[in-house]
Image 1 (cartoon, rainbow, N blue to C red):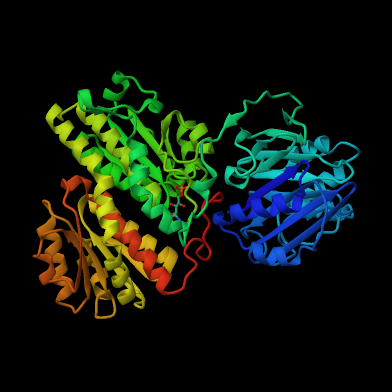
Image 2 (cartoon, rainbow, N blue to C red):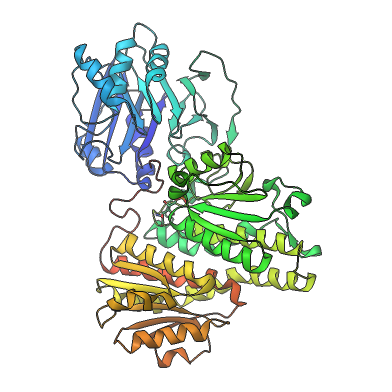
Length: 607
Ligand code: M6R
């Protein structure tokens, strides 16, 4: 969703701001803008559309060594130049960019208008600029704090005033803000990707903190003027990880990175000697692990699907009752916290508002919630009671791919750990580890045949609707396949457990609605084949994904793609890859914006 960048230092701010905004593009946005300060003047330039559209309206040779920039994903007010950030007060001096939602803006706006303030936009954010302007006498930081103390809602903000050149005030409450510490220069950003090309030294701000930056240093305080000492942390991501490196799209790159991502998620966490796993970040003793009676996993979108796989696995092999739940629902059904229940909040970005707020609600009621996150230092990672990083490396494409594989890897490790404390024998543990370790090479085998999937996509991309059908542990994979397809190709797709189609969805089946069936070998295969026959009998076209050497499915399906054989509980890893590639190639065939599909944001920081 919205992105923020701020800079003060010796460089020309325009270049730093525009580069930062380019790197934030992946978050999803509809307009963008910058404010550049030069001595005691500030110039604001805003544009609906992409950063390249903004670039075109930035006058050549615009000078300035400090400034702020923003990518907007509209919530309050339509998508146009005026509603784009940054926003200014009446005098045009106080300029702010804001991520989040100001809940009491209507009342504040009314009061400010009565006091003579004239608003230009329809946004909630503009009220912040006018409020700071109202309180400003000669100290920007003081005025920002006064304004923030009466705002209700969430914010990550940056603010400048050319009367105090080379200074930026930043603050956060519910929307991330990170400080980048350079050599004689300072940065503020909503995520580290915007600044990683300049510095790897960062300070993560917490809710309620305010930072004042100048080129030579920074000062962190709370709203009551208490000084807060912050540690400077080091980002381990490399610049090349957030670049395409020759690939056409980030999504393609990230799909192909999955074998390495899985190896990283496993690395250092398997203890072969005892055929078990070690997940240090969980911070749970053996006794505490043994006392777990139930597990609940909350997440959204792809992360929820990964949680579904995790839940199936934990229940089937660790024999612990486990349910996945969509995070956005949990908070509003007043959940009962049962004794000895362990919760996981699973989120690639670690910033998804639905998951974060659900986690806070659980913690408020006394639950222990562990995070499963990718982004180091993200809010869920910091606020959870422990957790595991998936170490996928940055995921830039809006459509999540490698995070899914890495998230489920963590659950496979956790299931191994718990199972080995219960019923799983040493030999079974070793076999399980061998299967897990074999996955990256088997994924590479699939990649070598990806041209076959491209051909299937070319054949099927022009259909309007599709069903994705699987069973057991592969049912969430069918849902994930459908989500991927609709997200980036805009083809309407739904994922079901294959038996469920008889209860309604089969009414959709005719020669215009193809179905993608997940039919690996294993105990449920014959059941899925029966469902395939039901579809075939109604003239539905079928793409089947099955296991190499299995010709039985080919007699029913119109098209078949074969994946390598593995123990049946590990098929989600191998089935998801052809589905990711299928949606990628369908989107290409239809000329879609693969990495930044319409209306979507990478990190959904509003409810
Ligand atoms: O960062 P998170 O994992 O919490 O994000 C959750 C969903 O917003 C995300 O998975 C979304 O569904 C993806 N665009 C799916 O590709």
